[in-house]
Image (cartoon, rainbow, N blue to C red; front, side, top):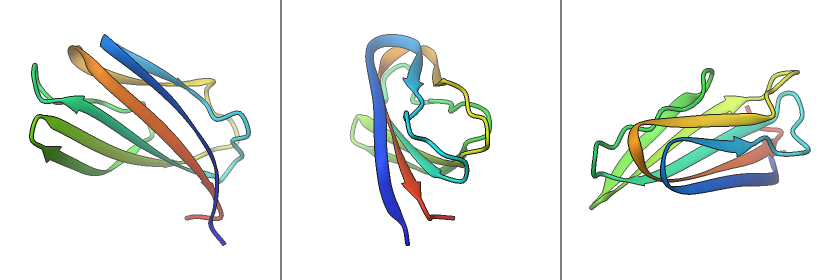
Length: 101
């Protein structure tokens, strides 16, 4: 049975890298789903940390929404850093689920 464990998020008005803290109760084999939203000005590319797989990219007017996923390993970093090629406004949320694959 899939269950929602919780989430963590961060946002910035003008940055090239945004650090999102690891969910405090993250356990090995939890599935993390990260979503990032930004505007399409100055390019719309947001790069996830190594090990994340892109599931979707959607453009809605002047907004771009990215979605990635990752299965948590036995050892995960304290923070996940998402990057952009130029300073921009970015918001990221990472939702954590147990029992998913």
